[in-house]
Image 1: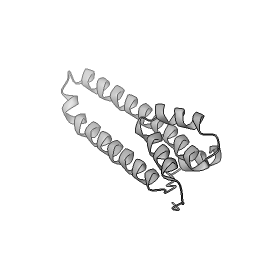
Image 2: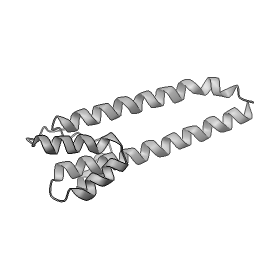
Image 3: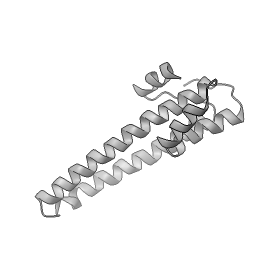
Image 4: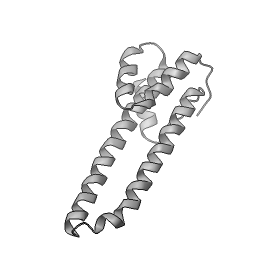
Amino acid sequence: MAKEKKTDNANLMSAIAYLLMPISSIIIYLMEKSDKYVRFHAFQGLLLGIILLVASWIIGFVIAMIALATMGMGVFLIAPVMMLFWLVCLVLWLFMMWKAYNGEKYKLPVIGDIAEKNA
């Protein structure tokens, strides 16, 4: 969570790592060899993107099963949960891009430590 003195290019590359995660994260992680700050954000973005992708698949599967079990009526009960999930994802996505662009090495719980070791 420490603010680091970084160049504008490093800050921009770090923010872009979150832009189309996990794809942009992989590209930036493979391109950047020396800047540990950029590599940290790229790896953290990669892990975050994978986690959110898997979570959305699981939630989608659960909604589909509930919809089948209740002949479609369960979707009306689960839809707010899905909307809340996507709202949290949007806020987290914007927050991480903002922190990276402003030169902050913000570590997410668990994956932040993993990203730091692999940076």
